[in-house]
Image (tube, rainbow over all chains, first blue to last red):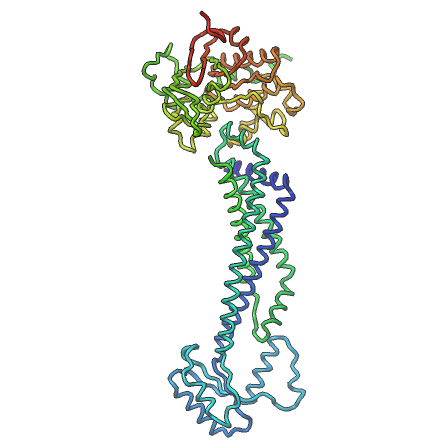
Length: 296
Length: 268
């Protein structure tokens, strides 16, 4: 078994270098495809994180006009609390709201100039949590009806919907593009391996005649395809590793307020997805190639 | 100093090694074919026909029994079916009807997995040698063992043994382009022998060689036969066939028209 592996890997290595131009072309295409795959994974995981962040946030936020008497606010809070769709209502006064805002700025590493003005520009607000984040019922109308108390109602439904549609679109478009690029990669791998097979036609004939088993004839080529996949994956991960910092910042500015964390699990996920895709496409292309060429 | 020098693997060792293990079951003697003695059968074709998909009938009702240790010439004009016969014996083609037994195996019933095993028990030599130009003599022979998963230690001793048998020990490091035609053919014969086959099939082995070198190759095949391996040689070389007075099977239009000890042409 070990001998078989050594034999196959050695011949795969020889085969890779025998036709360097084609092997390099296949590796570069593979790398481009894997980069797109990684981009899709990163983008989707960022959007998913954003979605989760928005969904776990307060669903409805009503800004209270400055100087509203506490009694009217309490009445409104009680009124909203009574609605069947509502699970919890909180009141955030101006001081608390400012503190929370400063906290957010600190988390995002942005400079805090709020103390410079000396006044508190942040309005107080009523925060409503729903039993089901998608069922609003009459909550918004109730809040908006409170003339003079509520200046504006923010509901995250729009944001959630927008994120969902962007995520959905990106997922669909990404998968379509990936499938197309994946097919191209498989096609190029098929041709690369086909060339390798043709270059070895003489050897293959002799191997057959002296009684080499199919595995000995086939696996060197599959390993050669896998080599293209592994190299492509390694280059891709190398590029991602170098670019991780700029990408993180880019996504942060793109998504803005939403604190997205590119943690260890995303890195692991990327290694598995990129490496796995490279291996499967490389081996798959090689397998198809020798299947149509060798078997008879 | 009278210590004996290390013994080189010579023909005698090769003779014992060249007998294949007899694990396979031999076919019963086909009805209507009297074997001349009780020897085991290397090759048995019973009522074999081969029609190619394009409709060409390459072999028709061929019966042939070759006992172990025989030396058989297959003669006949081009297109008579010699090549097809050889392809059937190494299961490069399957018969359209009839049965083919080679080295105890029913070729038609072999599974994909067993085809390589059959081919290891049949060594084959071609007119054009089929050597790999970028490998040395040693590596060309060793290649046959490497690609069948033979452990490295066994490769060295087996290759040394067959190279000494064909007289190419000194040329082991040379490349095919540096060798004469005769030496290239001897390399090919060494490769055919390295799996210790029960049968060696030679397809026009002297076709590209001048008469003197041809005789060297014939002598080598005769020696291999003497060591116990069945040899089947397809040839056009009338001089060789006539001179040796061995068993001659003549094919014409896919049929066996003669099967007797004698010369290239029918003798009356």
